[in-house]
Length: 215
Ligand code: 3PG
Image 1 (tube, rainbow, N blue to C red):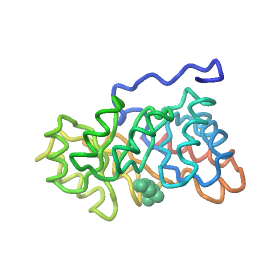
Image 2: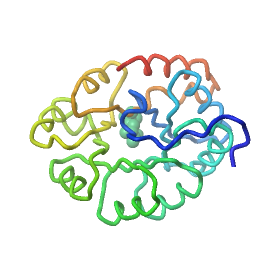
Image 3: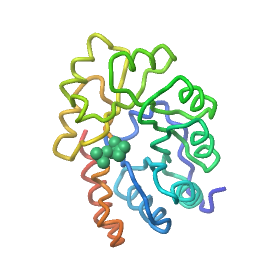
Image 4: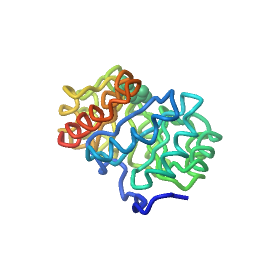
């Protein structure tokens, strides 16, 4: 249960329209989780995608859910139905996966949480649309063709909307955000490892503020 009187983030109508940039975080130290989430909120980005790539990830989700309930709390790098279940139980309010097999899609649907399944090819995009979902991640964005690739999909696969992630920077984000089929981008540049290690929350807050103004 949340331990503060802050309002809990309401379930969003669209994960893609919350913020222009979703901070993607790989966290090694549990004690960084709460101050980091607070810095993002203070910077105007009340969203975090905490990747399930480190041993502390689920505990970090639990800590943020308890202490920063106003943030939209995503679990990223979800690659199995079991991880989807564990992330939901820990308090995640949305899920993000790097790819989307039928089994993984079912596992994420079973949580009842909104989620962004990963896609990188036209056939993968069509498979996600066939599953009844129109919002998805495009990953790894830069390596898969970047903004020109997504621009090419806008007309033939008009129903799909994307959060491209992977290799995007503050400099390249605007080229994605200007596309009609992109709602937001994801990136790790807002939470540099050296800032986390130094506890430089003012820097994270400043990077978040710049990103929040990008659209
Ligand atoms: C990831 O899965 O790590 C995200 O796509 C973030 O990628 P980035 O570190 O290249 O921003």
